[in-house]
Length: 161
Figure 1 (cartoon, rainbow, N blue to C red):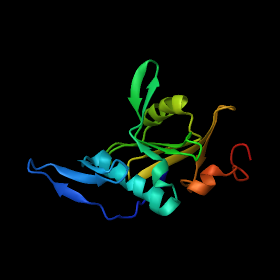
Figure 2 (cartoon, rainbow, N blue to C red):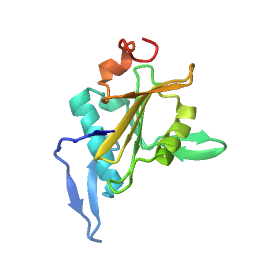
Figure 3 (spheres, rainbow, N blue to C red):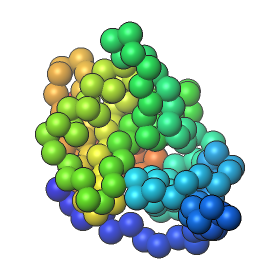
């Protein structure tokens, strides 16, 4: 577990006439209801783009996929240049602990998407893994890889390295 310490960003927030707060979602290009989970998701999106070099055009929010005949939605997926999932992100509100059950939910989603990187965060702490589907192994990473590092070959000591 590592404190994520997401840096602040210039969030555009508005209040509707019905007293509902909304935040501008740069990826969906519209205002969305500002829930605690959405606050975490928007911070992670900005962190990935501004600090780790993930291209905006290759980030997909609430992407639908099927798992065991059921329609599921992922919080955030970063794609590689080939359009395949590279990083699956599961966001929880800050009051939700990242437990083994949360990790299992994300791993289950990832059985379909097969992203080689998995990130779980509640905005306060995060866990990031490199997933080796062929060998059935997960390696916990000390930090979220930059986009360039995520695309490159595993570093010595990483799975497959």
